[in-house]
Length: 406
Ligand SMILES: [Fe+2]
Ligand SMILES: [Fe+2]
Image (tube, rainbow, N blue to C red; front, side, top):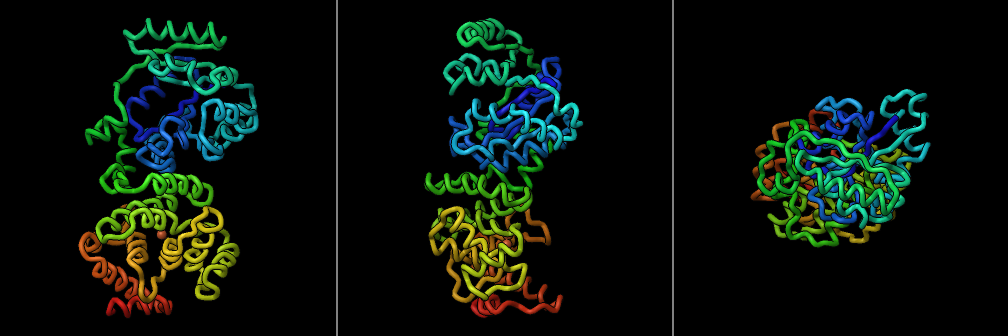
């Protein structure tokens, strides 16, 4: 097959990206396109608006929702340590075993997936001019030809840049015609006009309340921002998409609530983001990790992931801060004498934007003004649920309820 590869931040994906993909397919140079939402782009390291998993799942839902044929989304950069340079990514992606398994997992017949493939790195004509300054451009060209998009009228400069690359690096450069509108992700965010964002991506953005004030991370330190992005990448291999996005949403909302109630925003962001990190580990492992943090305090299956998460975040992700670890440990049950941070994570877990198990409007409204009253509303609905199901309420939850006068 002739495979086009299209990397980018897609923060958010917009109609310009979609036009690029469609035009590349239409050009006849490639049979399919693999898009790669970046994980650690050297130009934008931790500078993207959203951590990588949001951009990956947004792209997946967009490709699926638009019914784009022969377009795939790759998570290859999650497996690469450090900066995901194009040369490094291409070396891995074009290896026989990776590309075969990737194509098969995208419903391409084994015989076809095992064929010899030709690779094309798709790029905008604006980046062709700087290509020779990229990290190891010669190596990029060893793995793939360049396939540069040109808009009508732009031809001269592009031909010049292409010739220079051919002459200086000996690579193959092809040029295709780009039909479609011109837009930029940063322009969309700055203007707040999402009309050039495809419908499935708009739905995704609304569901998770992205690109709002709460996700701007204003006032968060660079260190915490980096830790938040890295935690998202780290958890990618342990959590399915839905749960991963939920736990990250809790990070964003906790950071916002920290602003409202005067608590450390960095800690709230990290505690919230990591609160469910252990939830999809095998139960046996959860039980072992839970034991290490809190002994026999929690034995019920559903509760294990909270103390287990505290140990997991400490041992595997390097979180040493006791306040953060406690907020993770008590996010399911609560406890007596809760800190503001613990209350914030407990609450954010129940009401983050993608939660829709019941009408959360009144609790969400309360959470903007009065932490204890929002806690009381949440805890009392938990109590009602337990009573109606005839389940015992955990002793730690009983203590929390007592503090809330329930
Ligand atoms: Fe949880
Ligand atoms: Fe949760």
